[in-house]
Image (cartoon, rainbow, N blue to C red; front, side):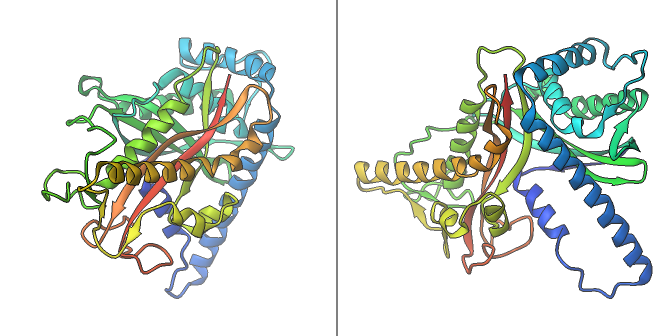
Length: 373
């Protein structure tokens, strides 16, 4: 059952929303709300356990496993739009949805994003009936087919081919398991050509850092340095996801990293001050680049592009633990860079970079996963 749909205009909003949900409620808590909170916590804990089982199974999947399981699964879903119920009525393990089935869905529906195209995210929450057997949550074939039909509808509903839209990625995330109902968040990465094409990623002068205030020499142009760094991230992701000559290639999103949050750095085994050393921040809308010397200007921009490459690649090591098989590799799937200031507020409403006094800063949310061949 479709619960709600949300349009997320910037990828950064996802992680910020997640953080805001974890903040303590300053209001008094009644006994009824305590019971509700306990139930929600239990549902979230069950979801975390299921995902842990999912990722543990993923780490052991061999190339033969992908061929044996993904190939017939894709054939049935792509041709018939549903799974056939075999004589035994074998159910679908809930844990398999978040790697095996996500990979198949991406293989069927998605096209690799062009780095010069713009992406918006649309999120839908779906309910699917489950039952527990020997500690494993299962989905009957009939309930799975209904769930898959709703996923397909949710994905295609947001794509307008007449506008040049296409689906570049799909993410399935388990939110909670409440009794016999699993809540799954389906996120569609809808990509479309920009109204105005990107300009040369090696600018011939200084740009303001944020607020789309353009070139420093003329104070004109609806762009800023964060747009160039966003393009750099998108180009890097597209290069990593151009695909190979292998057959049966599939992508699965495993997590995301927000450059502004110390907790994300810790989770990915990184030092947050080191992360911030590679990201622009300040207390005014400063200029990046040099209008007076070409060599100096090029050196400044190349230094920042190199720093952003370090930001992109650093979290990859965290996901290598799921790439233990020869046919599996950890990759940057997609990402977004934005600039914030008192004029362009962060989606959280914060007026300073988290944990600092900086009022102007760049921020990235990067999505990571695995590629299987």
